[in-house]
Image 1 (cartoon, one colour):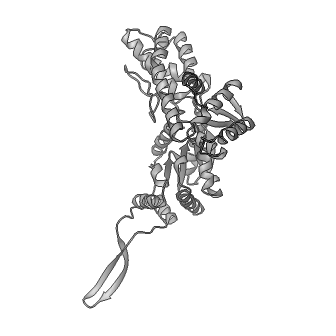
Image 2 (cartoon, rainbow, N blue to C red):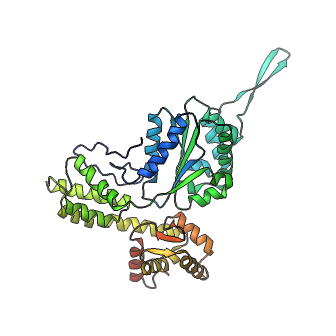
Image 3 (cartoon, rainbow, N blue to C red):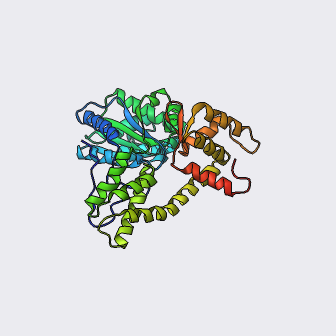
Length: 385
């Protein structure tokens, strides 16, 4: 079974804030890991799964580490687990070159024999550029089943994605031993759908969002205890509230509290350590919000941020689908806005600023980002929106 176990901590800080860093405890993802386990068991048993898996959700929720944990399990079962770079599906030409390399077909190959006046000569031929043949050759390059890991799936080009998923479908029809596990932002399902209906059917889609409170507690307390510096109840409660169950914030706050306890010579991580950690982490979190705001500005959707944040505040952090649609239409009608309603939503979803957590219900992808936006709008002349 794929286990969300505690990684060895020793005497050092066990928490791992940062992009793609494997946390000491992958808590709250039992459902996702159990599904992956079933698919890997099928593949190991000689039955290629009918569908791969797509994890999608805002950044900072641990999608990349899920891929890595599943890859570790696949290798433990004697399979190959190989990451396909996101760049490979951003252009068909790059995809062809990548698959040629994976299939070992980058060198000129013997394509025929020609009789000449002084004997037979060989004619070198270029490797095939057929994506389906190349993908199948990659799967069959060695005897072990292949698990393909595709991160940042939302960045794929429709044409390259169509060629890739046609290849995946053809390999499935031939019952070749492989499966694809992908991850991306909330816009990833739409990008995959644009590659063709067969691409959409290629995956079982699982949303990856914030942890439940029990998982947050486990993610904070178990690594600290395993590393030899337990966390008291006051610290756990303070850090849990401040994290808002967002995995990146859990690791950031846990790390800051641990460092404070070490500095003060405390044998446990106390409530006082946690209180100071919240203040310390606030600077990093503010910078994190500022980067997300800059991304929105670069993608020309900053004008929707303040009205979106106000709407979310009036609805308890959630936004009804109909109200969101009305808001985006109003913003799109401004002379200064260059995007239409659909493009605004696509960009907001691609950036992970909003995502549909259940049917017709949307949330801000990053906790308290709305508060940051409103504070920033209030202190800026004219504000945003």
